[in-house]
Length: 276
Image (cartoon, rainbow, N blue to C red; front, side, top):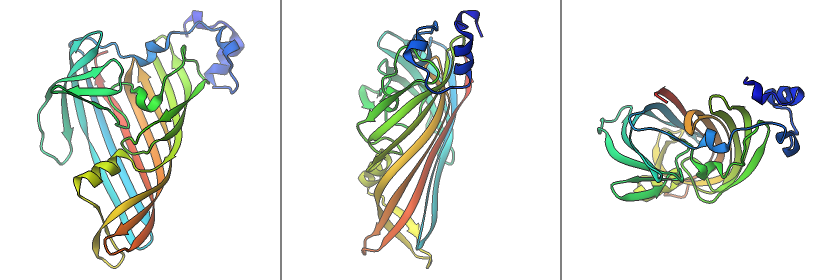
């Protein structure tokens, strides 16, 4: 550790093992880097990033066979523009088992980190994870960041695998020299996820196979959900991210049959190559 971060021996030791109760008074004894050092992307034209990712949703209950949906793939990003307003990428996604579609050009991530823009249209990025830090699901982080501190987040709308709800974010460790921070997130809520909403909008209901061997279509009524995740971020870029969500679901067939089940949804993302 750089000597300038050894302000108080006891505090440095405590922070390294994440002692509870570290206070703002203690924080004033430590020379800390601004939050932007860890969470704000500062990418340059020509830099390249590559992610590997996967998502699994497992539904298990009485009267039907466990249903498991999985998707995985890779994403390659090349920075083609960097301005005060946005970072611009060429993005090439490859989903396993699906035809390659080729790269998308001029994909913009504005500096707010919450929206994505392409072909003149912008939308809220409600993905569970992504290439860069997204304040939508992490809230506004305090400044500076120190190990042991935490903050609360109100998530106002459904997101990829989860509902609107509340979340607590905690700083597990910081590495100012390399601009690296590891965060945890624990939350709960109730209602549909944006995946649920997309499925309903598409008109393609969930299918299950009953224990009698009959395949039927069902609508999903979500119950309460809780989640926990761990993420490492370096200079605003997601290095690794894992999150697990659990919730109760009621599945209702067109004939009125009801099935109670428990659902697990989790996503994994890892940076596999970078030039930053």
